[in-house]
Length: 388
Image (cartoon, rainbow, N blue to C red; front, side, top):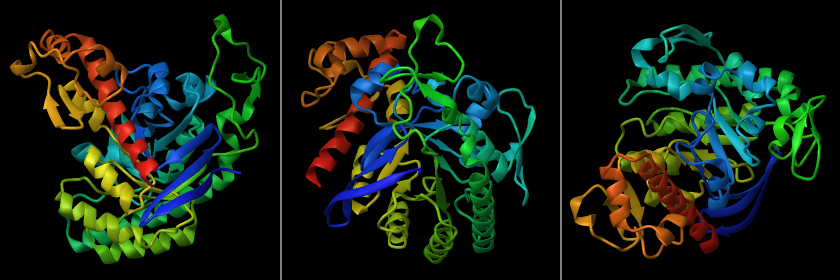
């Protein structure tokens, strides 16, 4: 058993459902905060729990380079390593390798790339990506794909899509042969809410992440639809990826520089070919307005670095639009960031204080801004689920 998906409500093309994962249920449509290096920048795990985060996204490329999959596996997997009790999804590393540009070389076997940390050479193949993600132990892992740049020639898009399909078959084969090796298969219960690795003690009295809610469960593997901005290739990619067979399906290769209207067009057309009984994941989008729009089209899962990245630059999302807290006009503004927001930041701090923190380059500015933005994104999804 891996992942079970139930749809409870329909409203036009929008769906409300529940993903049953080994580390608890996830209500959809859901926004997944990005925890690139086993951390959502500046926000502790207990705060994320308080915000109602149900699932985090981790990054295979970064975790493979640092601290390394062997260490994470030895310490019981990503859940225990980062003390996160709820679900985790890891991406395959394909997009990060794609973004390295001049530091990579793509072949049929995989991608040779140089680390952005120290310039050392590494090789990531479909099989290696599966090995790393199984070792990290996320609840949901992604097939290794090649992301096509924009713009690109038709032949380039076709060749890239074909290779992604061949890589998807290799990922599925490796996953089926090794999925029992996930780290938390060796965990044993030490109480209702804790786990340790079999034969080991919890040092210092620290309680780890909860054990899987389904002890005999395994990871789920999602396939990724590619095809650039070509609707016909997207249809073909979807149909052939479905033939391989995955636990869920992601729409990848978007938000790579194309116009927003084109992104929406490709998403809407691709959704037509995805099965209704499997979760649909749109990778790497977007603004609060965009994620709400995509959820209304029938997308179940989304992620984006925008809420925390914007926060670090003083850009805050509110019910009345975006505000730049760094602006001088907020220097004596005693009102909260958003009078309609019930997050811990808006309930306690003024715009004047947040502006002061940012101007003083205090780390707390990034923390509080991130908490507010994440809360705004999560509230957006809660309101949308309620409306469905």
